[in-house]
Length: 527
Image (cartoon, rainbow, N blue to C red; front, side, top):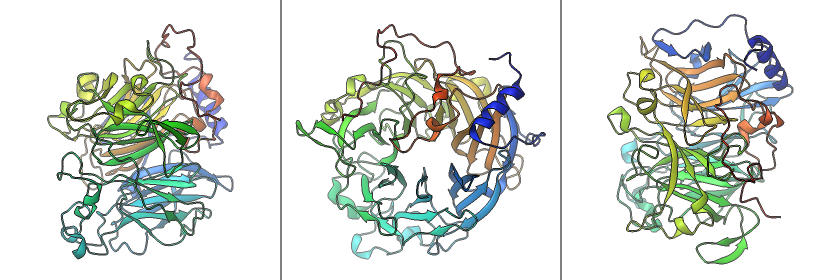
């Protein structure tokens, strides 16, 4: 494949996606940028500065990029994939500041009903945060009513005119909101605990227990969301209810909740044995069953800060593409640790872990501070540890969001920019590409502050909070998967058949020696 003309590969991948061919000439590389030979710089969209997240969809035959950030919500036309063209911006009317929307981390979209689900963290700017219990200690009886959290529902059925659906849904959490079961249900979690949530258990501000769990909402009627009264994902940190940060649904429909205390996987349908009661019952989105997960061990191949173990987000990747010798296919998870400990090499990493010993949920259920359970770490990557010659001269060194295409991981790394990793051998995560900017002007050419990524064929979209949207492309075509596996949210969706094609950035596939190396993942959803 490497011998084929790059242009032919690019056209084939783009054509399969229905995406227009790129502009013939790329934008010049920004001053202060460093980029690997495997990547080409395509362009920058600076009007998206303040961006948090972006997702792709099609409406009326038009390719769209939907984003949120401090500016609220934006819709872009992607006819030229290297240069998104702004169609509309919508700011919820309650938000008073021009750039006051916070924060909508991991914004999700309902591609069936054409809805954006945007969470509202209590740290928005229409209220003095000194008077807000969002992460403070104000008593409940004196709570400022503007110190709210929850989510908005925004329609992009007409992307030229974004429109809010219904009112604001207030919840005790609001840092992230994620779709389950095709966005029929939502899970909302985070941020840190406020003092009128003491009923969730004891906590110490900034330490163990200082976080909000998950609240579930029935969104089958988008005009009238119906929150469930009781939260879930309790006792996640060695028995203490803590910060449930984000939710990632794998291709089988299992929901993985990242946060302080590690990564926990839940079934939301089918009958399972509940490890907390030892009884079989039916799992639902509002009463799921823990089936796997736990904290992740430390060390060079694990998390950098095992004493806090704050897992930011995760992916249970395609078992045909990401393997580890001695680990059954489907039992590898990838996760980022968010931690800003300095010096730089002590910051958060991307970690591959083995869930095998955690299956059934008992290890995490029975974990205590005195007898903690931790999943086995397979490999970890951090720019200073594993690619020191490409480390950016910036101290904000924590990993953040990432997206996997086949065996290639595109990771946003705050000041370390974009890092492409080959995860085909999960025991040896290795860098195969990078891009970052050491800025020359805080206004016109700021330094990288990268928050998230998205694949689209051979294109990599970097959502940078300071710089806006930056578009790069792979010089050798695209990763093995250029379709649905990249953005699977609905558990009914299929992985793309393109997953069987070679990945030009992957190392030699790992043979774990097991006779069932190509079987389906271990815990298939029961009928």
